[in-house]
Image 1: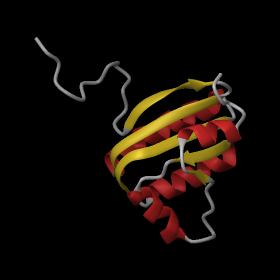
Image 2: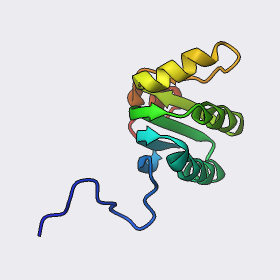
Image 3: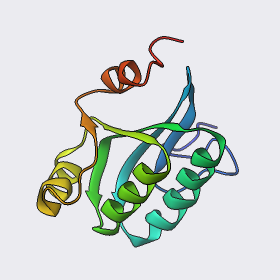
Image 4: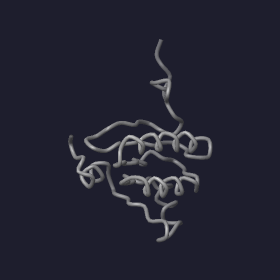
Length: 124
């Protein structure tokens, strides 16, 4: 019997987190879908766990379709705790970051590869 699309592949799958794993010396967390209040609680827990295990984090947001303003607070808090890059910000994430203005500076790059290179995590 074929599996339906978007079936969680692991019992600890978190709403909004498409994947999470190590690439070289960095953690890469790929987010997707609607990052509203329901998803943000789980995303926050996942990102906190990653920060506890390492100091370099890339958050790939190319698949995010909408983002609650609380996402900005989460990213700013994460940036204080780790070396953070937001890779490939989707239009909703880019709009959120732009609306926050210069007081909410979060490092963004155009691609996952660019973020990994900046962190020295390259192809390892």
